Image (cartoon, rainbow, N blue to C red; front, top):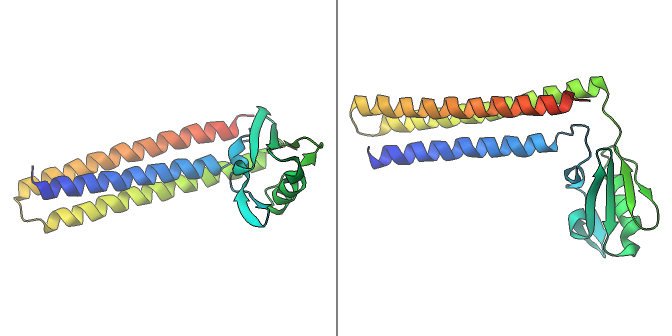
Length: 184
């Protein structure tokens, strides 16, 4: 096959893979009711005057499905971490016991579960749009290459096969996430 065509196909595949990776990251940010350290991933703490990610100044663990514990490496940071969690406005009420910060993750209501499932579906639709755009760009690039019509058709068919594969992967990711969200 023509080198230009191979490059176009590889480029499209890379764009589609990036759409999948972005979707996985976005789905990970959607809370499914179980406590995970990722829930506190975006929290920045004032560490001696500089904004520092929580994970760089404390251990964040989940002893069970409803609890997150934050154990700072320096005890004098307990108050700063507690304040940062409250300021982040992620719906958690941290409790400071002098050693650790304990966060109880409340169970999701049915209404909230449905809302999160819709949000997951929306994210998957964005990923599908990204994949379709990669297909469109690749097909446009293939039309510009100076090769036979049969080679163009074969390349477009290969792009369509890639598209179908990645869309199917998105749908599988969505089914898994929806099941995770709706499981009480």
